[in-house]
Image 1 (tube, rainbow, N blue to C red):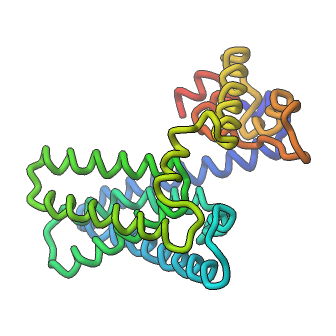
Image 2 (image 1 turned 180 degrees about the horizontal axis):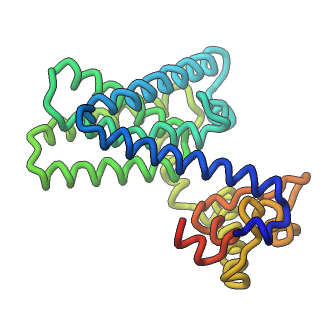
Length: 267
């Protein structure tokens, strides 16, 4: 329906096609999961294989970068893997970590547990190395919730998982301190000191713009995909070198600015 009030129809079509792909993917997953003859455990091999391939590529990138210079904050941005930036690369790793934890909880040969543990340690270490603070917090939340879940289910592998968590912490700290200009503690402290951080304060400003727009336009927003245009009006005093705040960095708020409160709730 937002087609009728969108200010930029091409942007509407682009984002609509993206949402359509998400919807079709969900339908396909539901169909696959409903096939009785299909063993769901085989499906988890795909994201695990994808995670391992991404880890290998990021490790190669890391080794290339550290072979001729100090690995500083600027160089961290080059750890993109298959993605466009390090944040998306880290998120792509994080979204597959629960699959690894699930695979560790089911019965299989010890050799597979060892392989999965190595993949988990590498993935967690690379996430911390990427320094995407929201992703690091997400990783901690996933691991903590997984431990509580395994304890609740009285899973005997919970001890193995605790050992894995210790190894993850050690390996992550080692990766961060290896040939880098900032250690792990300094990176974690930057999460706490978000008010003095330029990136965090910028995102908080974007959130404020989004909330103000939703309150002013609770029913009809700017139209699907049109926030990147409307945001210029709100952030024009802070724009530097024509860098437009095209992304609100919060999907729910962004949908709310484009489709109103009803659209945000449906999303």
